[in-house]
Length: 124
Image (tube, rainbow, N blue to C red):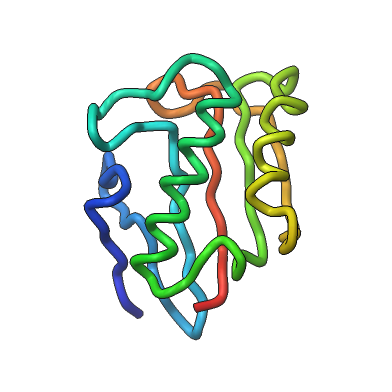
């Protein structure tokens, strides 16, 4: 097992790792829309938040020796399922070739009141 950490994505806000590599796979913790240059959310807009979340996930995957093209499963957490279409439009731009398995759920509350959080599992 190998812990993955990068300064190119927000650090863990608790006792967990950005990602863990094991058995040829990388298991990424959920990312929220924090811009690492400011430490704040990029905006309150769910589309912009989704874009930032996927950039953060991409940075973690890159640090693990993987990429969004190697993602096999994602879980999308939305604060409001009414944001599904907006999130899905941005998500589809990042996963136009490789379409991983996905679950999308509405959560009662996300860290720092984010509107979207995404985790993933990828091949290294």
